[in-house]
Image 1 (cartoon, helix red, strand yellow):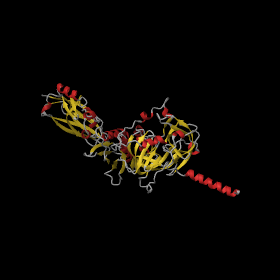
Image 2: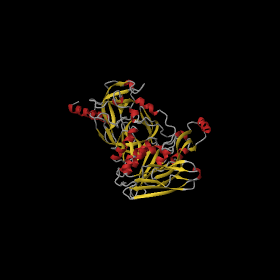
Image 3: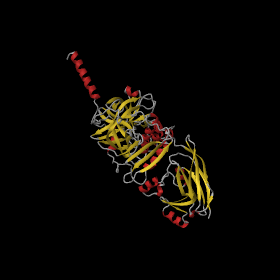
Image 4: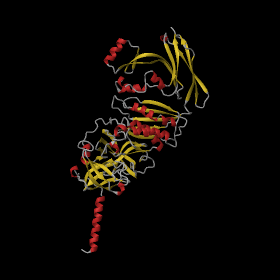
Length: 591
């Protein structure tokens, strides 16, 4: 063979080898952990940009035995590819498959140190991931497992903090459809849930998103997302497909939120760019449409199936008084802690993050929750402006959590609707005086109650109500009080926290939620100090001691005694105004 032919043949062979290495593996033979040896050269497949995976080179350093628990070892590899050595393992590469000698050995899943001079990463052995796909699914289609707060899940930083040196790679959680300042306002909510969220992300639901073809079949190394919210507002954790068996998908190589058996939507995604960082490099992604559902969130990875749909809760933010304002519509996973925070995220975006917002004077938010099999539950909250809403965001999420989560039945709402309406003027008010026409009265007589108040940048006004003394108040030492609805709830033993031990069913829980007083306006009330005995939501005043002892011995959790103020009469005044006041005056009723 002459020299020219030899060179041509070598070039052809070289092109063939390069083409073979560049082909994305599928249905690769599995490599047992016992066959993994230090010094083996391998390639890891992941998406650097767009939707097409490509490989980068690694070298096996060794195996850390029982690193993740008894029988759960880790493959330690040096990231020798120049592209990755400069930025390390990237958030969003979680689950990228590792091939040694063309066989699937494990998946990229753990970050080893930070700021190291030579980049390493930990890989979950593939056989550990396959265990996840064999676990039983959740029985009722719901996701009941609470999410531990971040400090409990990761540990406090400091000496002896092993997570600072060795920790699961963070999924690239990104928010779409959200303004940066809104995302910053909600950061404490997501941090408490253990979600390291970046606002730099997008979704394909907006009007400027290009029409996309049907998603292609997933292959190992492809980008995939766990969608916690989809629609006009999106929140998704992006990672990498590890293994495909028909419509069965394994990904991430580590837990998402450690939910166990769960129901979370699986979505397509694309990588816009990788942002390198010495601290934590991340993939910036767009979340696409729903393509399946994940049913396991375990130590060694997440598992799901293409073509299945996870149940979600529909959320809408509407502006009934503004014909030119488009409503926001999105869906959120059915999870007790995630649902309130993400639903409030959409509301915050509508109020704080739009050119058409303009709620400078004030606005009212009416929240309607549609539970299956029962009438809708409503709560209303008035705000003096966007800044007031921003400051009260944590309280709003807490109140929404109270309304959405109950300990009595595995029930999630079908629909949550927020209705936002402007107020004609700033709703803040201040009380200048409270007058009681007399401090002593007899049954049948009238007592006039007057409140002098002033609206924001307005002249002073007054409101008067008349109180007619009933006969059964004779001989009592009472108080007249002027305060807000929530403050009166607290004072009279009805705090804005449902007493779980005193209720017995979901229906009673809903009834308790409906009984809260309005948060706007003021309440005139006549109260007396009393010893109350509560039986679920029923209250008996001054129960005889013998009956009280019998009731409490039968069920101490259900029957509770407390010293409180019993409201004998009340009337709400000045609705649509926000006050912060409590004034008390004595009232003696003669015989």
